[in-house]
Image (spheres, rainbow, N blue to C red):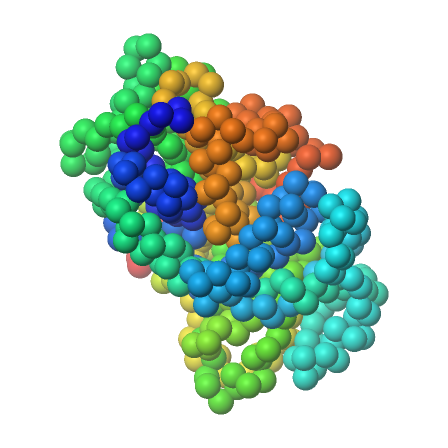
Length: 442
């Protein structure tokens, strides 16, 4: 694999862009083609958003170790630092995760960046903007002043511009299927327009569309298919545009991640153009029967209206739950709301919420870098380096074991589970208000 000179990277989200930039930076003569469907960055992608949380805080030392590398780049690099805002972050959580973060810092021999503050202090700091926050059930919050948030579109756009500027090519026609011969060798892709593209190495960074793509490409080969390893999952996001007269009240607040049972969500600080954004931390599938492979596969909704900031076809329960996260952060009387928006963010979840960054064990020349599980975006500055190490067969054993094709299922509970939020709770068709949406004339 180290001798490969041509690469097809399918998917131009943060894993795909980060990898393309790393490859072209290492070898300017490599032939690297990114393939996605539509503009780049794509507004429908999970990586394309108003903002995303950037934090080193993990109860798992493996992920904290990578994020400590990433934090330095977010803070200092010419490419990424203009898109990072060190607001600090509060976690209201009673699961033991916060204690785990402190232990991870210690186990890595790193300065402990986070610690506890009382609920009373949390409500009085930042000019009292969190005075009405719902922290019922705890007496102390975890606070890390070094964490913050990133301008998602700005950062991804900057990395994309850097990659294309160094010679990476982009094709916007979208992929129909992989080209896999009878010997289980992947030689390229068939585009939606019927054109064939071939390369030495084919890397899938296809997020929530991975399982469907593998099933479409090898409908009679269950070993090539994803099975339960990669499940397309959605989560609802809410954004409120505030009148400029109240921006001063809400500016300067930290990220608030409220994992308590009455909230289950996260609220990001006010953006420079006046948006407050929240996520409701409940994920759901969208199971559909796939006739060629005779199985149910979760797939993102095909309509653009649900996955971009239009908010036209989202069940009432999800809308209300995402809005509630903001109320549980700033109180029921959030001032100056001029307009409201919702979207369903589609990602791909593994059973253990670990990434899958691995050769496909049953298909030669085919590799995967996916499984973001709603916590992958913040790794943008560094994840490409680890993916390239995997492509070259040089990935450290600790990472190779955790991110292997089969390992995500082995770490599904207990030690080795990467992230304990955004658990899959239901299927979209069972969510309250779904039938109402489907029967709406709009």
